[in-house]
Length: 193
Image (cartoon, rainbow, N blue to C red; front, side, top):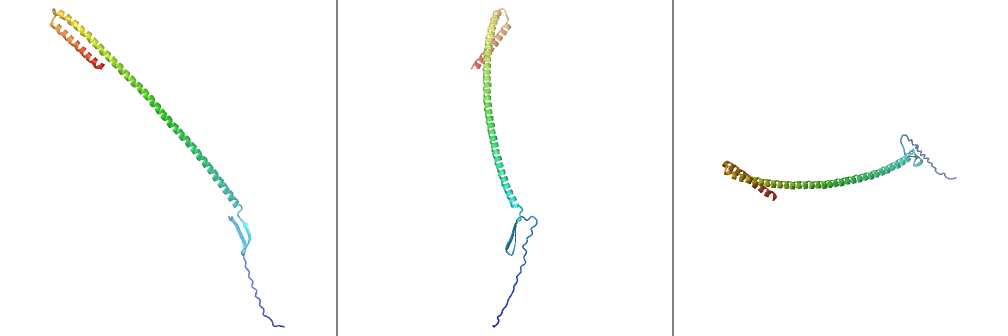
């Protein structure tokens, strides 16, 4: 037979003990991936509805923001309308105040004109009355002078039988009457100018 050969054998055993379990407790919301040595064994979603809840919260937040913006726009619009009314009312008030002031001015001017006219009329009447009084005084002085002259004539007639004291009194009366007449005429000429 033949020669025998050489034989050898090696046995290599590799054993890797790896646990692929994962324990989750508490508020771990998310995704857990477990497996052994690179093999993905199990994928478990552990959010317990949190993604859906987050989605609904986001939708609610967006809706709330949209509602808030709508309300803000509404408030802004209302504020503008209110300001417009206030400005209109202010302008109306200013216009009415100005109209009232002009009306007051017109009335005041009319009243002032009437008062001035009355004052001028009163001054004219007073001047007429003064002129009439001076004319009357002049006329009275003339009558007094005539009476004095008549009295002087009577005294002259009595002078043949009267005293010189009577004559002196008569001359004084005549001089006074002539002086009063001259003053009255001078005043009358001064007022009539």
